Amino acid sequence: MIEVPPYRPPSEANSTLIRVTRGCPWNRCAFCGMYKTEKFQIRNTEDVKKDILAASKFMHSNTVFFGDSDNLVHPDIAEISEFAVEKLNPERITSYGRLKTASSMSTKALRGIRNSGLTRLHFGLESGDDKTLEMIKKGITFREAVEGGKKAKRAGFEVSLYILSGITERWEEHALNSAMAVNAIEPDFVRLRTITVIPSTILWHRMKKGAYAPLDPVTRLKEVKLFVENIECETTLYSDHVSNYLWNRRGIFYTGISGKLPKEKEKMVDELDRAIRLAADFERKGELIDSNMLASSGRILL
Ligand code: SF4
Image 1 (cartoon, protein in one colour):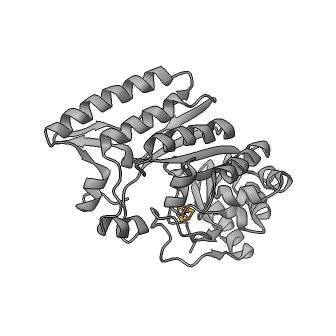
Image 2 (image 1 turned 120 degrees about the vertical axis):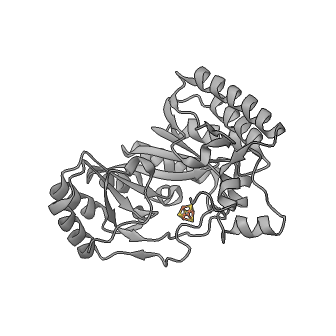
């Protein structure tokens, strides 16, 4: 039986999923519960190749995704990518990676991986604000994140950066410094996720003790607006996750903003202004619902 990664980005929903490593070599982020029960392991290269070979017999996708959270640490990642290209002939191979790992690698080593056929990396930046990065235990600084992202870009990767909104009371610094990191890295994609506090994570324990609370939805939208207003590089922004949605009693009224920056900035800011007005109105009426409220009552699983 093929071993598949338990998580993949929404954009890889139709990809052939290949597990190259298991779990996360860091596994300490305060908001993350993804691999808490998984001990990090580098999978045996021959076993991964057997899975690729098996997938080639019945998978017919044009794209391939490698899990789990940081395959740049696999010593044979280039060999595995080359094998996947040979057997699966995909249009693209994508993987999660850690910016910290990329920052510690040479551009030459990254280019070798890129040239083997792995073309896109998904990095969780979460924030460009050092104090926020420390608070969420991301294990990286602004400087290291920018270095890692720029190296990946220089090596020829398409870079997809994840930003976590609503995570901190320092929302203005978080928005401005995250925009600064994005402007420095110039990623191909920026993907917004809204913090949803997951049971058993460090943030969940802090929240239970009254030592942490995610931002309210209206302030969170103001933070996203400030972030978008300050992005100056060319990139494509997506809010491709249910955590960004807002509901009232009748259903979803906001699904997040998406579009090309800077070309569609004005349109996105207008959408955010409208969402802020609606959210404030529903909040006044006691009708505003966000992903945290749904998750805490078990109505959505993230
Ligand atoms: S967010 Fe990413 S780096 Fe952090 S613990 Fe989770 S999988 Fe690991």
